[in-house]
Length: 115
Length: 130
Image (cartoon, rainbow over all chains, first blue to last red; front, side, top):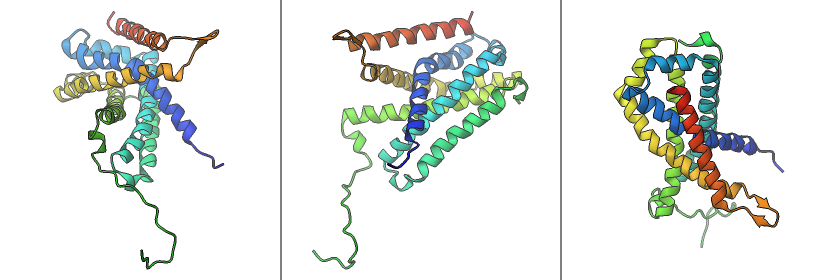
């Protein structure tokens, strides 16, 4: 039987789906509604983001949902008619998720790395 | 039927119109569910940029007060909630729990996940807005 990467990507897809389902809605409410409405100031949120645990939270919330998108979108794009690109889509999608993960590791894990 | 090329016969591929997913309500809901992932990724990229700019107070505040970015987040919210609802509704299909001879009610399993979602949201909210 040919070896496949499918179980790895499916696991990341599934983990990203769980993380996105439980944590993304409330995070969007905070950054997209509560801060613009003035319930929480941008400065208070910025101090929170500087905390190591918050940066770890954001890292998980960025990396895993990107793999969730990559796995769903590569198949959805083919379903939508992009069959010609069926070979390129997984490379582009998983590649984008890997890139986002590397950037997140680089800028989020060390405190001083932000620009 | 004549065929000039004496090679293998060609596999018949049934033509699929590009708008197949608009032809039935269930297909449309399926495609919306799949495309919620685009909004999930877009918001993840926004979070990444926000986190990268955390040491620059002005740039950080500007990202949060940009009207276009606020509008995009307000659009993202219902799409991500749709992802959450479809994901949690599938949990009883993935987690089949047996108590002795009896299968635990699927509604109870999905319900437990909705309760967990509510608790997680309240905890995150109380941490960020004390």
